[in-house]
Image (cartoon, rainbow, N blue to C red; front, side, top):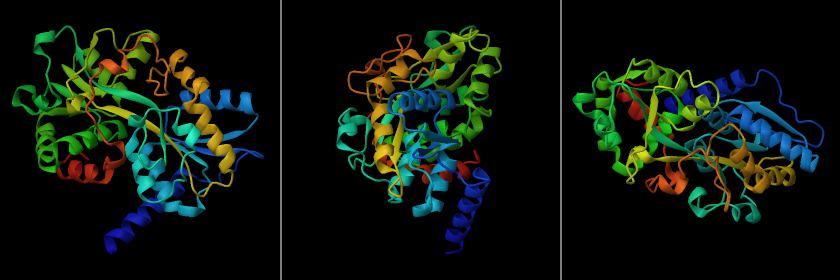
Length: 335
């Protein structure tokens, strides 16, 4: 009981820290709690408002922060829509009974593998796990064939990750679902012995590029985003896709959902339908987010390895357990 109260108190404190003042929607508009990349969501909002006239007020934050905040706020949440980078945050809100069903027309725009069977949220984009490696220190033959190989002593001091981030924790969530708790706990303990921690995927990639480590586990789009700019933090980097349904080939689904407490459900549902429709998914194709489009018939940025070629493992995004993952990572000394 004391633990439950402490967790609730922590969540409430988090809610206060994220919202130092009341969040107010513009007249007739909706409020979006956004944990997606700001530039991507801003492009979606601009296109949606231009087409529909519906105003959108966006509050930016992180997956875990916002999912816990929504749970703490409950039916009193001012948010109409929640957007994430990774699905464990969506699963937490869904399991708390705080999402309304997504309109059938919206669900019909996205393949079943990118939405939960419950229909309470829907995929809006996707990102692939990769092993970013330094091309001057590793050859293709020296690359790990599986994410699990990074637990081997031969990789001690040679690879990096950002364990405190929601991105890496989503990858561990997939490992937990695919291999079970005991195997995941063993891998995390070995990881603690072998890896170097950095803050953020971009920093991991920079370290790989500079030769501080041979490789690192990140999402693909950090590399493509840097290459589209100057390439100064990625010119020495190659991307290794594990494929073969390996846990390291995990594709994380970014989600969107409408809060059951929304005061503007019609407008909120319209926003989600627009994001998953042709116009919203075309933003992924033509913009600089380099995330994968997930709408039916939608095309991703042509620079990317096709989503169908990634050979990702089958993972039920609705059962990815972020709380169990943080418990296991804490026990391993990673958090």
